Image 1 (cartoon, helix red, strand yellow):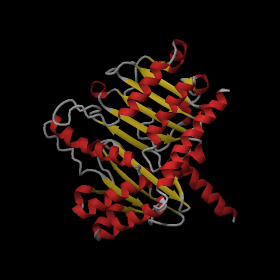
Image 2 (cartoon, helix red, strand yellow):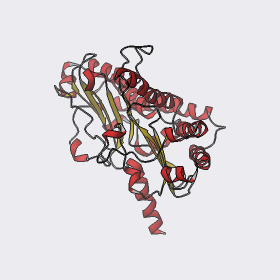
Image 3 (tube, helix red, strand yellow):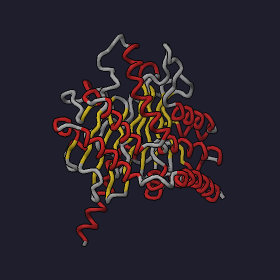
Image 4 (cartoon, one colour):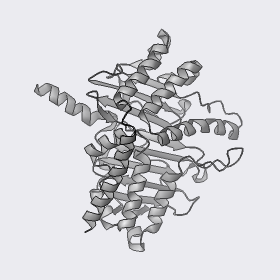
Length: 354
């Protein structure tokens, strides 16, 4: 019975997603739009700018991702790519066009709000020079529109959007990092702004809805870790999350399952519906057959806290512990498919078999 109810929940979700896709039926394919947006940006750059912005698809920099400010990146405080501060206003507009070509409206709004928080930090930290909205970088890997493989990244403090396109039509969007500092703006004209509200509120509502027995299983540590476990790793260490900890989806009631699905959607729906549908078909993103929800830290607003959602395929991590629990790090990872590695393996195997 519970399996049937979960299938119904999944079907209802997919109807909503497919309806969104239908509304965009006249739009181009996301891969085509991304290629067009990237090409327009690159065509606007001079030779020196292109040298900074473009790498081969196989370059090691493709997996050299970070969510820290530039000066904190090891070993030399360098983030690679072309920063917005070295673009003209017209080029910046084209760069934002590339970002919007991969994200949903909600995802784009969230990403732009994250970049805008640099101004808030600049004021809160008495003019700290490392806090600048212009320090977000665009990098293109390979040739946009390549029928084989290419990709792009938009990245800076607390934001790393990594998109890989394989066979001209298959998408990978992990690692996908969205953070927020401050999580809630404490003062000034934007006081009260909460950038990643759903990611916090949905998870807290879920853990507080659990029975004492469920909560005993779900809360894996009294103290929350100081950051997400995966940090800026290029590959997720599956062993660090095996066996899975937390409460299993099979032990949740219908309302709790709905809450867990809503939490997963908060991360996935940052990207275009067409991309989400494809990833779901490949990874069973919204299938609650083998999902674990784990929490660490306090349960009340203002408490240091951490949670994760884990399946055999993907991992979501959220940590809010720094700056008196007003500083969020949140990431969506794929155990075997970050940077499209699973798709690339399949692609090369198929080519080899021909």
